[in-house]
Length: 93
Image (cartoon, rainbow, N blue to C red; front, side):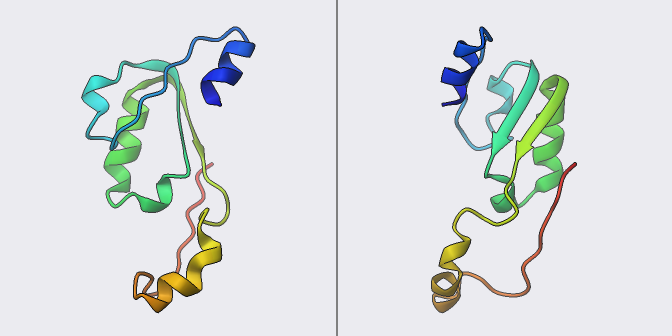
């Protein structure tokens, strides 16, 4: 959908999949670097954000909704012991 929207607007885009920042060496710099719905699951957030920043000439855009996309399954995750401790919310502006 990202590439489709960029093309409609006459913009060049590339979509790269992989575990960031492990794949960062294979990703060229760009004017804008973006990611979505992944910050919740990042264990090494500083390295993740630095690698995004190092690949962006102008800016980094992170899409992160207020609640995790699977928050509606919290009771199930707790039941199986996946969720422990207090939840935290990170807001990047």
